[in-house]
Structure formats: structure tokens, C-alpha cells
Image 1 (tube, rainbow, N blue to C red):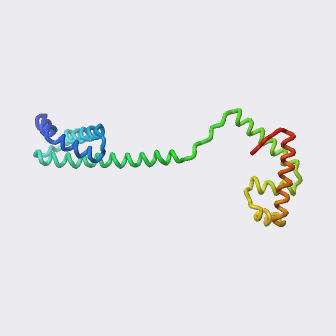
Image 2: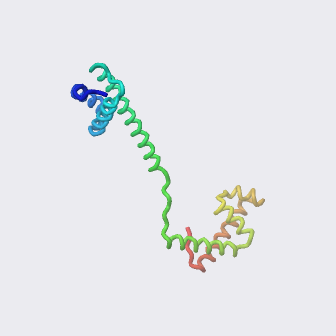
Image 3: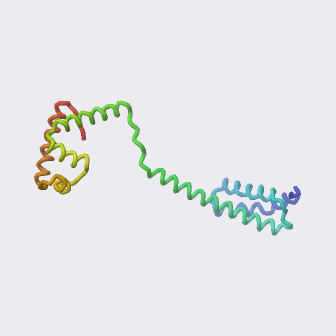
Length: 171
């Protein structure tokens, strides 16, 4: 263990230098002070004391420099993690009323789809729910692209008619 008088001498002599080093790395006065205090705690708890002031000074400089660099690395990682968090899509929180209306609308749309003839229903489902292009639907259904456009138009018109009867408005 270090004798109290020796510790005070090292502290009084080296602290200003350590503080300057920590401050130049971190740019924060409070953090710099905390890092210097941490370095002196480690110095005080050393099992084998250093023989003279110069060796103590150089050891403390290495410790405070490493503590400050580690702090900056950690701060950089935390900033990156925070930025990633901000860029993530936020879950949509729906009220019970909104969810009920959405469920009822989906049920009414499904009922209206079931009223369509199969040849129109299959085409509109591929287009609106499958996200296929007119060209892709034409290949799947084995019909011309212009016929697909006509069927999509007719299906939309019939769906609109059925949904207007139920007074449902969907986007």
C-alpha cells in the first residue's frame, strides 16, 4: 500500500497534468475529473507501489489516457446505437376503436370480394393483394395484358359498388 504522504505528493504534482490530458481527449470537464479520480483510485490500490514520482507520473498518464480513450470509444458506440435506434421504424400503436374499424372494414372487403365472379376476383387479388404487375398477372392467368387491365377495372367497379352499399370507404 501507498503511504498517505507519498500519495498526496503524487496527487498534488500529477493531477493538473492528468486533468489536461483527459480534458483534451474528452472535451468534458466533469468526465475529465472523474477519469483522473479513477486513475488515482487504481494508483492507490496498486499492490506493488511504484518506486519514485517519475514512474508514478508516467504510469498515471498511461492509465488516464487509456481511460479517456475507452470513454470516447464507448461514447461513439453509444451514439451509433442511439442513431440506429432512431432510424428503426416505430411500431404503430392503434387504439381499440381504430383496430375495430380496421377489422370490420377488412371483413366487409372480404365479403365484397366473395361476391365477385371468380375470374374478376382472382385478377384483383393478384393485383391488389399480391402486388403483381399487369404483365405478371397476364402470364399467371394465361390471358392478354389488355384483358387483365379490363378485368381489374371491372373488379374495382364492382367492389366499389358493393362497398358503397355497405358505406365502407377504404384506401
